[in-house]
View 1 (cartoon, one colour):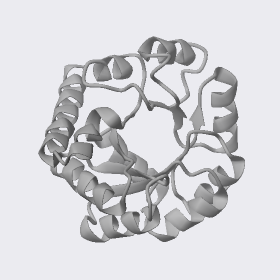
View 2 (cartoon, rainbow, N blue to C red):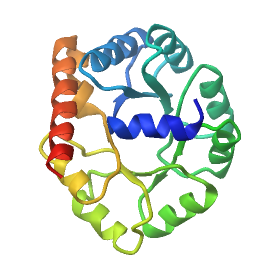
View 3 (spheres, rainbow, N blue to C red):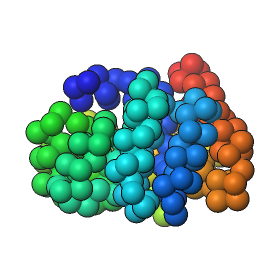
View 4 (tube, one colour):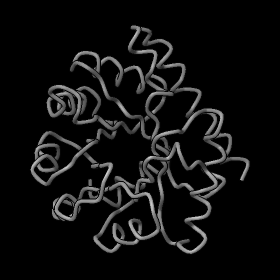
Length: 213
C-alpha cells in the first residue's frame, strides 16, 4: 500500500490506538483486544520490548489491520519498523531523517509538534500528518487556535484524548486522534475485555459524530 492508500484507510476510521506495554506478550494481547473492538490502526510504541517483532506478528495475524510504529526517534528505528511491516511511523518529536526515511519508502510520517513553528517545520520537511503532542496540557481549544493561522495543517492530538473530549477534538479540527491510556489502561490489570469495550466505545462515538456533521 502506498502512503496515500494507507492514509485513506486511517481516515475512514480515524482512531489510532497506542499500545505501550512492559512486555511483548502484553502488547500483543492489548493490540488484539483493540482490534476486536473495531480499531483498525494501531501504534506499537518502540518503548515496548521487542516492538519490531510485535509489529511483525500483528501484521501476520491481522493482514487487514494497519499496524504502525510509535516513539520512533531516529532513521535507523524507522527503517527497522518498516522492514517489520509498519504501515506508518509516529514520533513525539520532529526528526528530518525519520521523515525522509518514511517518504523514501512511501510510509506516512507523523512527527510530533507543539507550536505553530514546529507544525510548519514538520510540514515543510514532508510530514503526512502532524501529531499535536502532548495534547493533554493544551486541550481541544489549543488545536483550534493552531488551525486558525494553519487551516491546511492535518493535525492529530495525542495524549489527553478521552471519551469525554474526543468529539471536541474533531469539532476543533483534528483529522484523526491517537488514544493511549484511556484505551488500553485496563490491560495492566489483565482486563482485556475492558480494552475491547473501550475500543468499541471510541469507534462508535467517533462514527456517530461523523454522521452528525
